[in-house]
Amino acid sequence: MLKVNDINVYYGAIHAIKGVSFEVQAGEVVTLIGANGAGKSTILNTVSGLLHPKTGSIEFLGKSLTGVPAHKIVARGLAQVPEGRRIFLQMTVEENLEMGAFTQPNSTVDPGIQRVYEQFPRLKERRRQIAGTLSGGEQQMLAMGRALMADPKLLMLDEPSMGLAPILVDQIFEIIERLHQAGTTILLVEQNAQMALSVADRGYVLETGKIVATGTGQELLNNEAVKQAYLGG
Amino acid sequence: MVFLQYLISGISIGSIYAIIALGYTMVYGIAKMLNFAHGDVIMVGGYISFCTTSYLGLPGWVSVVFAVAVCTVLGVVIEGLAYRPLRQAGSLAVLITAIGVSYLLQNAAQLIWGATPKNFTSLVNFAVPEFLSRLNVSGVMLVTVVACIVIMLGLTWFTSRTKLGKAMRACSEDRGAAQLMGINVNRTISMTFAIGSALAAIAGVLLCSYSPVLQPTTGSMPGIKAFTAAVFGGIGSIPGAFLGGVLLGIIEAMARAYLSTNLANSIVFAVLIIVLLVRPAGLLGKYVPEKV
Ligand SMILES: Nc1ncnc2c1ncn2[C@@H]1O[C@H](COP(=O)(O)OP(=O)(O)OP(=O)(O)O)[C@@H](O)[C@H]1O
Ligand SMILES: [Mg+2]
Image (cartoon, rainbow over all chains, first blue to last red; front, side):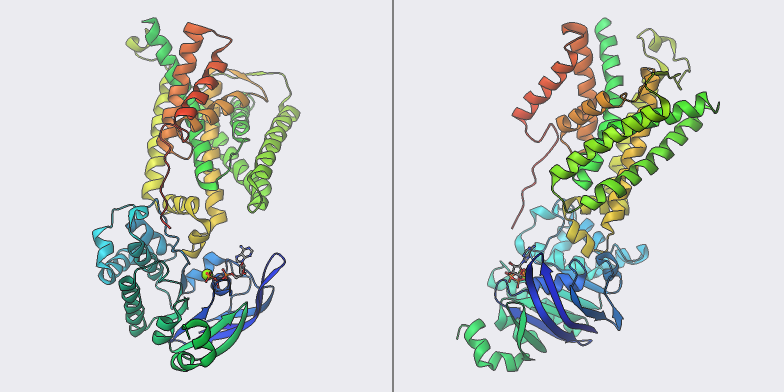
């Protein structure tokens, strides 16, 4: 479904991603783990078209994404829940969801909103509230709901558990499981390697812009080096 | 009675400032830049209207349509050529470019239409009812105030109810996130300039109908005052621009009537400074708390 081929991404002179390749098959949950600054967000933003690789190529559903502007990539079925949620704080919950459906035909917006409310009843209660006044957990749910409004074939999540209390982290991972079971393909970026690997079919370990290990979730959980670096020994 | 007349004249000139300020505030709110050439688009609007009526002999309303069309295109072209390449640049570079565009428009106008002022014939010349004319209310004043209110309400509706309007607010908050929603940020900003410039054209026609001297610098002072009005009301806020514009017009009229004709402008700017010292975000501007 998604094929990333030997991409190199730069911020000016900084070589952030150094020849990374990976792929995500339809129906899989794939996780990308790595320490702060390893380049996880950079990869997601490159796939989303916010950044452009200097060399290498990205293919989604058999079509190249090279040169496709970010706003058109969403319409192809690739949505991202960005790091730090980045919901529209001054807009209401419902307006945020509407923005998520920006590329969708008008007739599907209301049913889409209802579906998100079923997944996240909390959002329904707060539909008219300004998003900036939601709690951190609610904001994360809104960010996920907003991305689902685009009816994505591949959903990319950038550290959805960041800054949340353990109970909320569990909730977020339950939602990820549920989306997975419903058939959504997921690319999950996490620092919480334990959690991420336990829900993932496969994982990639990223270190300073390079992939250093890959395998199924179980394999990586049992990998000595991974244990040392990310699972607290 | 005299006071009432000053008040009315203040409200009507203030309504022109408000229409210009609404254009400023839309562009600032969404593109996050001060388009200092906005005032000069007003002047272009005035000239286009003048040419269509005086040279082509077309009716007034046609000239308004022409002015709006030309200014809309002009605004979009200015944005595309001058500001879009600077999207990633610092705000100082953008500001200086905007000042450059302002001079460019003034000089181009001088080249095309000459420096000698044109005598603009008011486009509004219907008779107002007796009780209004006794208060020195003219047709232009009436049209201006009504136009201003309609525009303010229209923009409020547009930004809060329509898909494009909401997309504009999304771009204003977070361009990257807006792109992730599938919003074409460049096109959205372009639309914002189109709206702002269309408003500038309307303001230009009204301004020239109000004070008929049309020259290449006609837009400068009203432009600066409207910018002041937008900041005064809280830049980025639509009701703020409306309130700021009208208040500024009233303050100016009062200062001119009761204090000093020569100092009226200085008084206006002094009031702005005082308001900003007390309320740095302007009258209706607000700080939004951010949750991390
Ligand atoms: N806008 C930028 N300009 C310059 N360098 C950047 C920029 N954004 C990221 N970098 C650098 O690129 C590298 C990868 O950053 P990235 O944000 O992708 O890391 P990450 O794996 O997502 O980290 P985290 O877990 O902290 O979110 C880092 O060294 C970072 O300093
Ligand atoms: Mg990151």
